[in-house]
Image (cartoon, rainbow, N blue to C red; front, side, top):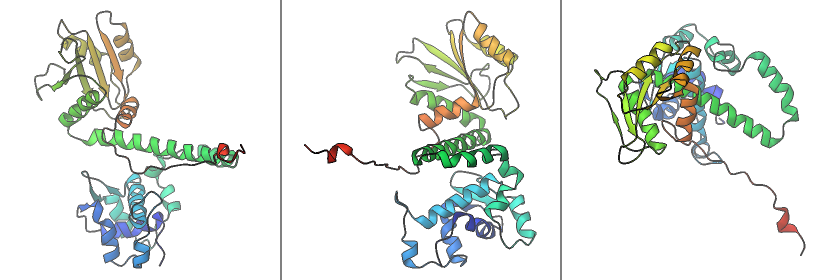
Length: 297
C-alpha cells in the first residue's frame, strides 16, 4: 500500500493509544506498523522528504499534531503522548473513519484555526498568489500555530521552571549573569539579571503564568515596583497572558523606574527568535534562475 496521507493516520494513532498508556512519540510509527494498520514495502519505508528524514514518520508526526490540536491526544511531557478522554470517546462511538473534514468541524480544532469567513476569503485570494506568496503564507501560518503551542506549554510547566525559562531567554538575548530567587519569600521578585558583567546595572524580573483572559492588573505592577530595592530602577514584567490598560498606565507613568512589559504574544516571538524551547524541524532551499549566468559576453 502507498504511504498514508497524514490525515489517514488519525484513527490508527488513536487506536494504538486506546489503552491509555503514555507512549514515547518516537515509537508511534513502529506501533502502527506492528499493529498492521499500514503495510509498507522496504522501498516505501525508505522514502524520505526533500529535506531528509522518513516520509512515513513525518506523516505520523503531522497526524499526531492535528490530533493534539483537536485535544484527542495530549503530550503529558516532552517526547511523550497519551490519548485523552475525548479520544477514547470517539473510539467508543464506533467510528470507522476520522477524516480531516471531521476534524475541521471539531470545536477544539476550530478554536485554533482561522474563522470560516477568513478561510473563505483566503481561498478566494489564493489564485492571485505567486508560489513565493504561498510559501510565505504557509510559513506565517506555521509560526502562528507554534506561538499558540508555546503559550499553552508555558502555562502547563512548573511555575519555578517557567521563571528559569524566562531568565534563560534574557541570558540568550545577551544580558549578563542571572540568578533566580528562592521559591518562597522572594518579595515579588522572581529573578535578577545583570545588564553588565560586573553587576553594576541590575534588572529585576517578575514572571506570571496567567491564562488568556486573566490579565495582569495595576496592583500587580504596583507590588512589583514596591518590591524593588532602592538602588534598582529597572524591571521587566513578563506574563503568558496580557496587561490591562491600568497596568500599562502604571508601568509607563512611574517616574522613578523603567518597567518593560512583555505579554504572551511578544514572549512567544522572543522565544522563537532566540531558539528557547523550539527547534528547527526543516530547512528549505529555494533557487531561482540566474539570468546573469546566461548573459552573452
